[in-house]
Image (tube, rainbow, N blue to C red; front, side):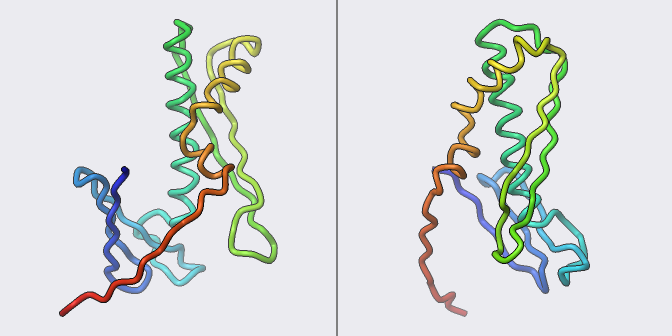
Length: 134
């Protein structure tokens, strides 16, 4: 099971601990009331999708023994006009491989990309409320 802990600092600022090893910041952009001291939660969502797909492509290339020298993934998203969510997420995957090798590589990587599979499967989010004792 993955473990992440988030501690609210003030306003829209948070500190994030990942697996007890990595410490990150979270915030909102000024137009949303934050101070931009760290990425927004939506940024982290796009980072997760892009990084997972990047690593999945690299993994599949390694298994296929394809000489992958360069790999870049760009991620953009389109906000829904009425709801607080994205309509779609677009990935631009660039590599130093010809299209006839890259496209099948991407299709196989898509099947093993944990993050994009979780999002497209509409994974339920379970929440439990608990009072902090002072």
